[in-house]
Length: 113
Length: 110
Image (cartoon, rainbow over all chains, first blue to last red; front, side):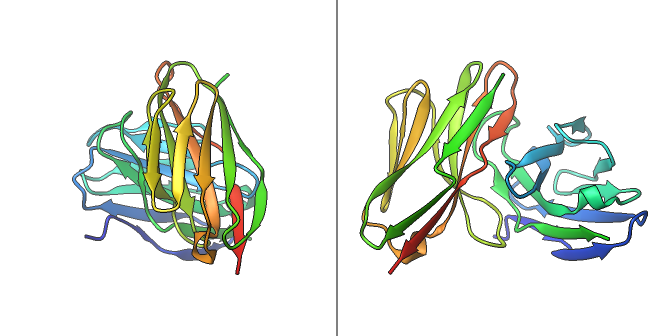
């Protein structure tokens, strides 16, 4: 059972380039999330999807877009990367949106030069 | 305002030296308090959920407790493999937000 799988694990971009982080879960969870983790700060929610077909902004959505492709997959897109988006990104899933524990992927480390 | 504060930021223990990590919270209507363990270069791994004051959960050398204002993660006779960052998060029943603390970095030396 793979759980939550993220790709790529590492990426270096130049300012202004675009890229998409992919996430897939095999636990049949309804809710999926994208977080970023920066030194000295707690995990901050970028976007979430309560269920297939819905997406909502989290705490820090500016500069990002998301797509809930189907129940399994939730992607995060940076249209024009900025150095402030250098971070570690985590995808997570949960059975229901406001209850139960989150299951996290292993993270995607992004550096924007 | 919903808030989570973890202390200390970092803790160094000798193997076998028991201690506690603290998670203080202010939240509108606690729906759940979660503890996670995060190893370097990995995603957080779920440990415990606590729902109401007085509740306790145990797993191996770890025991989590909850009051109306804080939670403690007690580590009994730690081993080097317990070294990790421990994260606390609270789910607000009023705002539905899940707020994470910044974590406690635990190092257990042999």
